[in-house]
Length: 196
Ligand code: HEC
Ligand code: HEC
Ligand code: HEC
Ligand code: HEC
Ligand code: HEC
Image (cartoon, rainbow, N blue to C red):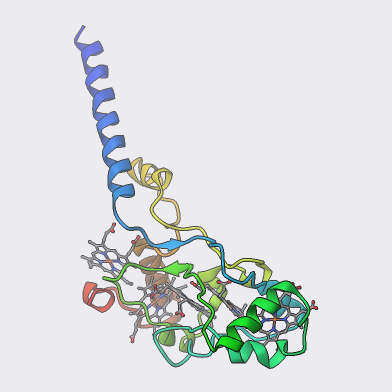
């Protein structure tokens, strides 16, 4: 009888843990990198692979500031005043240019406000864009997979430690530890550097 009650209690406890994990991981604002519907369907693959345009030609602030930055409409029009000017997506681009308005691109990669992520030291230390953003050059729509996930939390709970999903704190710290150990980098592990 007591063995049966024990199993019942264990079941109830596991259920409580599950419900708690589900609620706690879904109720807060997670870090995101989901594909969004963009105002203009911009294909990375065409520009980077077919036409060999460098990431930093368009994301020119990455090596010198906190942000990577997005190219201005003027920069796009440098080519598209002529190139593919008859295509519907390029006509949309030309409309923004005529109105002198920036394209309202929807943000894809984002860490919560209470964290500090600067691009500059990462680019200076030679960390490739792709090691954090995935193979963007193959993408028709910039996206990634991340955020707290129930399966990941459960695996951690049972002692199997899977690689942390991109943009989570575990992901930042795993790479910092690894870079400090293998390349003699000085990537921060203290709370205040990433949270201030
Ligand atoms: C260095 C030149 C260059 C720059 C800068 C450039 N593009 Fe392009 N883009 C191209 C070329 C070349 C193509 C392929 C055109 C074709 O297949 O006819 C293309 C294709 C496209 C297409 C697909 C058109 C279609 O429907 O087939 C879109 C959308 C586009 N570009 C948007 C942009 C935007 C937005 C920017 C600025 C962020 C930009 N491009 C900057 C050269 C450029
Ligand atoms: C011709 C210009 C151009 C080139 C070259 C280019 N990008 Fe982009 N990139 C854009 C534009 C425009 C957007 C915004 C639209 C979108 O999200 O797809 C963008 C979006 C992104 C985003 C998502 C930004 C966000 O909102 O979080 C990432 C990450 C990115 N690019 C990385 C790269 C990498 C890595 C390369 C090189 C392999 C690259 N880009 C090359 C123009 C460019
Ligand atoms: C060490 C990881 C890492 C590397 C390397 C990295 N990024 Fe990022 N990137 C991020 C994170 C994290 C965010 C979200 C930052 C935020 O929310 O403040 C981001 C945001 C962005 C954005 C959107 C916001 C912005 O800063 O303008 C673009 C565009 C981008 N990255 C492009 C690039 C390009 C291009 C490269 C290579 C030259 C690159 N990134 C290298 C981690 C990285
Ligand atoms: C792919 C590896 C990698 C990932 C992922 C990564 N970093 Fe780093 N980070 C580095 C390296 C390498 C340095 C440079 C260390 C050096 O300069 O010696 C660095 C440096 C930093 C610095 C120090 C800036 C300074 O001025 O000294 C901050 C802050 C930082 N990272 C925050 C983050 C945050 C926040 C994340 C997660 C959102 C993150 N990093 C993800 C590799 C990474
Ligand atoms: C290398 C950068 C980095 C360091 C060092 C770091 N954090 Fe974080 N932390 C992050 C990022 C990025 C997030 C956002 C992750 C997410 O939303 O999944 C975060 C999230 C958090 C959260 C919110 C938890 C959650 O699940 O939303 C807390 C609390 C926190 N950190 C505390 C700390 C403390 C305490 C330390 C020192 C022991 C620390 N952090 C060190 C990058 C860092």
